[in-house]
Image (cartoon, rainbow, N blue to C red; front, side):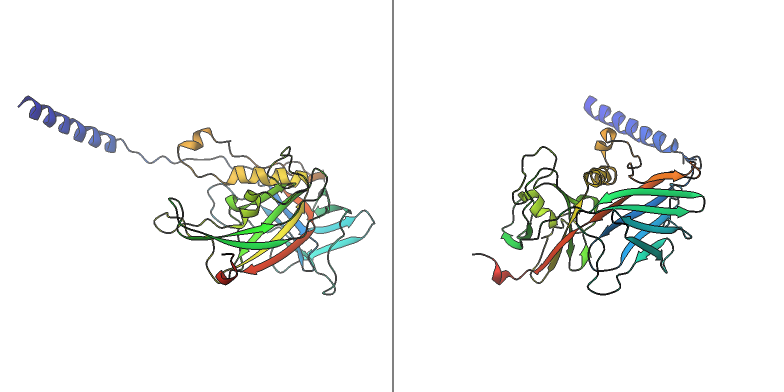
Length: 314
């Protein structure tokens, strides 16, 4: 009998606590101070024989859910150390400036040359420098089948093989497209220092280690949060290896840290959000408006393959 009374009192207490908590809920309107906009310069160009683009935009207030507006009226040039000048002209899209090769055989730049970006925007001048480094060829792309386990169903995984050059300090961005769709989520940015992940890994001059090779797989989930096979028969994968500077390697690693934030309890210990340091400097003009973004010139090697189960090893 005493136990029944105790359970009754506990039930009443829980109901009262719930009502009390719900009655105390208030909507809090967070008012953030208006901050100065920043200029964003997205200048990742390469030696593929195709149109090269540089984007100039402005940031928006934190709660404004919209595309960043393009910045028009800039004069954009890239000059190499042989005094060859490439003029990037305004495109139809706001804030986009393009250099277009004059023929199918022409491409931008040469490996080993250094390049200076210069942007004149009203009373402001921005500059940056980058060198086009060497890039290894894509040796091969392979697929393998693995039976399901506690994490994955029966799955097909892809791997890209390339051999790093002898000499410590080569850095790469391995980009992948699945069925024509660029894998550009934060967790899908696949970087390599020599043949490994980080500086000091003692993996110079060898084939990319397996985690780098397998970084071309898209780890998507279904509506039940179960992992899907990265590839299915008939899927295509296209790979580009971009040579990047060490500064670009560090920049992209910081981008991953700042943008790949799953939330939850772990965010209490995560690195605070901040702008990733840029290699673009203001040479003249008002210093009130911050400049962010990056300039890098890449050499590129590429290859593609379609998954045919009949081609897989027994």
